[in-house]
Length: 109
Length: 138
Image (cartoon, rainbow over all chains, first blue to last red; front, side, top):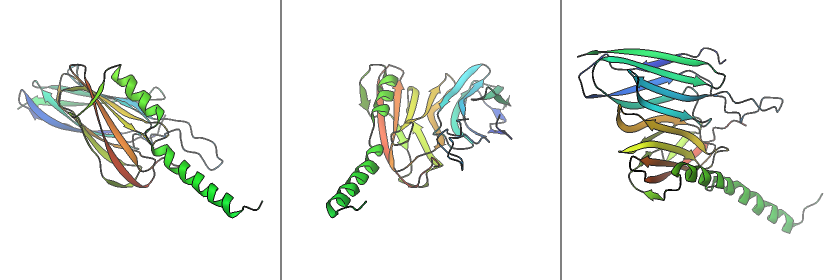
């Protein structure tokens, strides 16, 4: 379990039907690549977030498979076309089995 | 052990060749592209990869992919110890087939984006990124 994992999301507060919004997400995570060695020369085991999904009312916006080449504190920016008011669910899946979720409610404009 | 002039030169050349080789498109990268394409021919055009020409710090290199009409976009870094970077799958609510993130690059190398279109065709593009400080620890 990585410590102090904190998801942060920038999502719109309100929307009109059919409007496109830019979403930004950031989660604090060391993303240990499994390539580094500690001071004794032992390989530090891989520990990353390997998947990120964004859903809006159960429909997928984006589903990202991540490899160790994603930087520390993974950041994503993408766009969503919303059919109306609803709720975003952002989910990050950690190698150690932890799942981090964040939600954002969008109201009708 | 004493090296003759000839041996020293040969060693230097060998080291130079080793230094260059890992940053060529390697077999693992080609395999990953072939697997992603699933037998389809890989074409050009229709996918855009925006990456900096020079990245000072290989630990966080900002990249953007844009592939109108794509269902999936895979990003590869040919010169990393593991070529895979990320695969973006766009769902029905994606506003555009555009995404940006930050990646790690071990050194100067080609970053490759491969997009799978809704009609099954596959296209790819690449961008050379010069990295001043590599980002894979060590």
